[in-house]
Image (cartoon, rainbow, N blue to C red; front, top):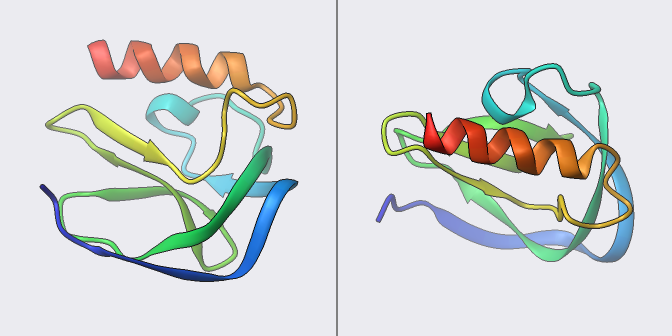
Length: 100
């Protein structure tokens, strides 16, 4: 367990495309920036623990984190959705990063 806290996002989203910004590293290497993604949520990580790198955001909201040593990551959006441009590429790159 890594800890942290999840709280209300301040808005409820169901099938909304938003453009996130990312650090262009790991699974996001070479991806469009900003990157349109599909969001379906009302919660968001509000306290991110040490050890997790925030690698994507929508404004002040955390949209993705990764842990370099454990090779795990989390998305606060749906890469598999048709609303996520480059979703298949993001999933491919995520698997390659996790297995590296």
